[in-house]
Length: 393
Ligand SMILES: *Cc1c(COP(=O)(O)O)cnc(C)c1O
Image: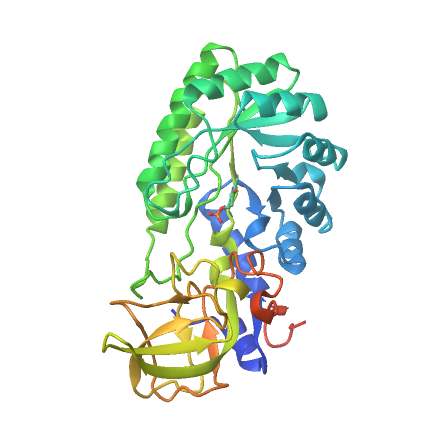
């Protein structure tokens, strides 16, 4: 998978390190998702890419936002998106957070406990609530289980409590885990939602939406062994379409679909221009030999997720030439700031020299948001958004 022409131009143009986002690519990704899931309400999980220009282009195209704090809500609202298209998707929030979100105009909240739903009733009276059901996280690179979601029995109790407290029991939600690699996980989520919708129907509670959360995969990652992950996106989308058809048959009124994609919209449309610090070879005390490629970018300034995924690396000044196995590492003094070690090294140019540019692909998700303030004095990457060679700014 090669970067598209707009990313390639922006990367080639960069004389120094930066992260670049292809706004046209991100818009296209949103359009494709809406074509695959007609009628879906997209609420971009903005923690995946809290870059104002990216958010504005999504809002201008009709997307809304899944926000996790008052600060994220304020950032979302800066795009001029109507507050009605922003929901508070974090089940973890204080009384003050709820009150502030309500003051900012947010009227839809996710919840997964009686304690939280009573706090919403007090500090955001009359709000719409979605109860988040727990999932196993199986099949995902990041499971997001245990901390979030409740059992089917709890969900019924929570939405009954919501109704009794003057809230609107508007929906059920799930998150099947981030970079979910299987259609089965969504199938299990649909089965669970069906079970709870039927129980709620018996109690006269008819949610008007289900929210299938985030978890839609990015396509361009490599696994820890350097092989393409190749998630079955088409199958996943089919499961979601068929699942929605089935769920719609279980409720009295119409049932809308909300999704909260994060990485799926941005990961493959962002890339990092980094540079080589040095390619070294060392003999180790045990007699082994280790070759390491140190780069200017690593875990703390753009590649936080390197435990689970690795990224395609392009060396534009060495398109051909001999490749050698190496562990790839970031610039800091942290030994976790490395990937491609052990039996699965990356392949890098033998001729790589200090200062050579390196392009790191599929780096658009969870890069800026997980960057440290400057661990070891390594500054956050400047961020550039492009619309192609003519439209760069
Ligand atoms: C992080 C998050 C998302 C986005 O997850 P992705 O795997 O990036 O799509 C969506 N919804 C909620 C509630 C989240 O916490």
